Length: 203
Image (cartoon, rainbow, N blue to C red; front, side, top):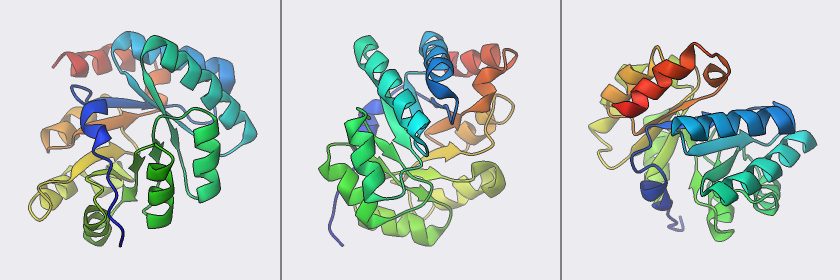
């Protein structure tokens, strides 16, 4: 297996325990929420790309991000074609729900560090063997906080981003278990969640 790397995430997530995900919200709403996230101090934003409208939203938010010095990535990247689309839309990185070495390699070769999805020790080991230390644990709420403590033993160098079912009520517990960052989506649309998420950032 060819070794690649996604060590760029060390810098991307430096001091950033939260990542915002905006799925299928269209251009205006995605931009509005991205700017709200940046205002809160959540600098890393992901827009999943599953439709033409998603791609247009990614183009607009990525451009706004570059102007503001923020990084915007493409999510739900599951094919080499998705990698090409993400690159053409200006994505800074890619995130996948599962681990496909070919997709990860294509993304790295296109200048976008890839973050593959994992849910088992086998997948973590395979990603690490390929040189990918940053992985997306999905679906995190179903895996549970204890999963991360268990994985830290055999894989001390793995950097986990907990994704799926995360909000202000449980993010702190996952971060306490050694998760490097928590990805929040619909929680950012709830005004009641915003102060709690901002408090997590302050910690």
